[in-house]
Length: 142
Figure (spheres, rainbow, N blue to C red):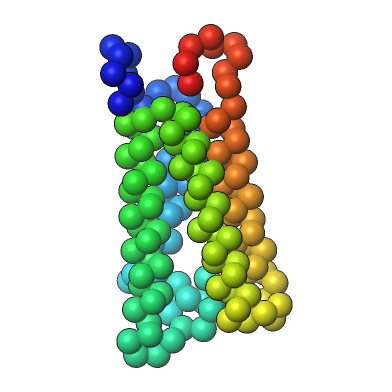
C-alpha cells in the first residue's frame, strides 16, 4: 500500500496489469494440472513421473505454481509496479531452477523442455524490466 490517497495496485487501464494477470493465470493453470494430473504435469515439465509417494513431488511443484500465481495476481492489485516488477524479477529463479532439475534428470536428451523453462525465464525477466521501466511521459511515481 502506498499510504497516499491514490488507489494502490496497477490500474485496469494499464497494459502491464494484463500481462501480470496473464502470467498469474498461466501459473495457476499449470499448478492445477500438476496437482490434479501429476503424470501429465511431469511430462510437460520434462521429467519422468515418479511412482508412488515420489509423485507427490510433482504435486508440490503444482502447489508452488498455484500459490505463486495467486500471490502475483493479488500483488498486482495491491502494490506498485516497482514491487510487482521486483517480484517478477526474482521469479526468474523458478524457471532457472526448473532448467537445472530437467537437466539433472535428462541432460540434453530433451532440449525442448530445457528451452521451455529457459524461455519462461526470459519472459519473466522481460516482464520485470517492462514493469520496472520508469514512465517518462506520466510524470508520477511508479
